[in-house]
Length: 153
Image (cartoon, rainbow, N blue to C red; front, side, top):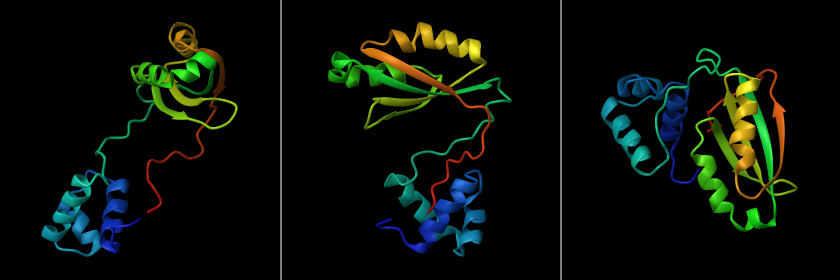
């Protein structure tokens, strides 16, 4: 955590906990006055420590009840064109995360859908149609034990 002092780490922890807090509220919680706290938050944003501030939506409340992890293996031609696969996967709002992996599969993606039938449609009409896809292994998550966006700062 190069370049961060203890106040900045505290500020980042507070923002991860609740980004809707005012600067004055954050300042009080981290032991600063409002102006220095605002300057630190501004620096953290300018320097990219804070990517963006968002609301975390409960997927069940908006009808996204299927949560699926899909491992995607590409054929030799597909591996030569990883950028093409990555560009297409970014277009799908159902895909929340996508990671390039080392090992027997090339990508791990996290997908949400209304239900398993909607995932099946996504699987057959979109995911399996991507160029270079050789194999897809889907794993349905039954329940969530822990989910966080907060880094251990």
